[in-house]
Image 1 (tube, rainbow, N blue to C red):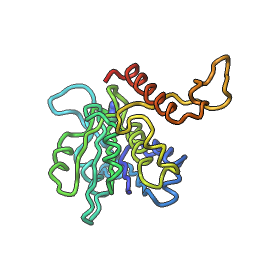
Image 2: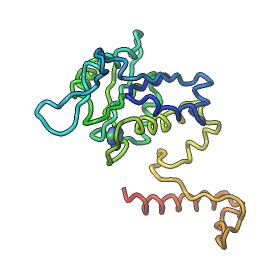
Image 3: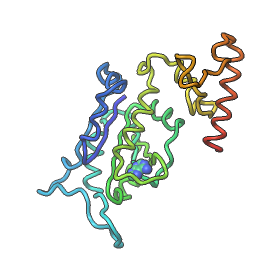
Image 4: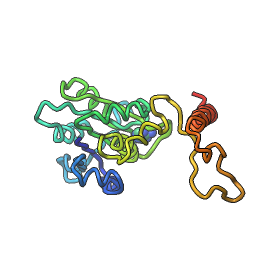
Length: 228
Ligand code: ADE
């Protein structure tokens, strides 16, 4: 998979070198391109924003600059690219979306700042046959820009790519899998810590009883934490 990210703060993407994502990059499973949006400006000040038509507070990111930056990462081949525009006004990111994005050949993250990107950028790329456009939010809160959202989505997606996680079994059992439940509580040694015991069933060796207990706990936890 290729992942391109366009941002005015390329330094935000330094953590991609770490941990499993760093290893996936080293082993060639993923190819990252982090582009500085200001490299696509043509004025001395490297201007990426301007005042909004219709008035109002804040600045809007310029369509020409974004268009040139996005065009520069679109492959000339028949590859379909998924253009992910990060915005608090987008569709809420989910494990289901992560699964869809994990099947993509090319993800492009457009990390907007200020009051967002000129809306014509979304409209234009929606009309392009080799681009699928997704406006995505990582939650109902406002960040200063899309960079942290792009990192969160990258981490959720990359770990689903075959070969990235050593033990694929762990993907099946974890929270937000197909059963729609969050994960059951987990314990490790010692059997007693600060007066708290590990639930007896987990040390019983009875696999059927353990599976039943875990399912019940996952249901209780899902209900308590997330009535939805
Ligand atoms: N940019 C600002 N806030 C955001 C959010 N919640 N999700 C995605 N991109 C954003």
